[in-house]
Length: 247
Ligand SMILES: [Zn+2]
Ligand SMILES: [Zn+2]
Ligand SMILES: [Zn+2]
Image 1 (tube, rainbow, N blue to C red):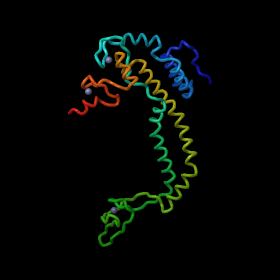
Image 2: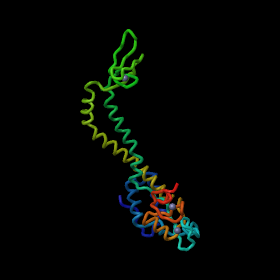
Image 3: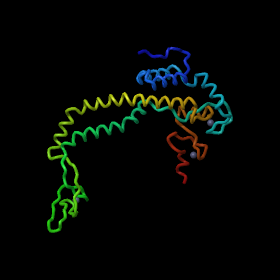
């Protein structure tokens, strides 16, 4: 299939909606839709569209929200960006993947397990029954109990057998699972990304900055300290160093 974006005068926003609608109705595979999404960003920027310029005009204030400057020009400053596709995909998939591996190994191990009496205090399987007391005694922690805890543990050669079983098909099954996961979560991840992009171009969470504040934020990763309002600090910190060391 070839890319659908051919028109140079495409509008960013309507193309995003178009990609989303074809993806959610399965007219486009998520792989194709992702290609289109990336190609769109290469070809156009949302702030180049007429819609954006209109939105920008009604959105912009007359004062820099960060430093209070009243000197134009002002810019729309985004304080967040849509996440990377790979990261969204990973967030969706990591938990399932761990779960899959655990279940897979557990299914192999289940027939290799047997019930054993264990110490309720330390979990040791070394117990003996004292007839005169009618109690179980743990060799390891020396504590006594009326009833041991029954646990299913691997048989003596279970560990060895399990290792062999895992070697046989584990990789093949992992690949199969990943393929399925890829098909399912790829679409989901891209729908989330498109949703975030729509919020982004709707200027949600954006604000009015002066040119200097915008430059320092975007290019240097610096913001003005909100406590003292005079020093600059890296975006990852909550305030500047002098303010952080003040109590
Ligand atoms: Zn400013
Ligand atoms: Zn014990
Ligand atoms: Zn400060």
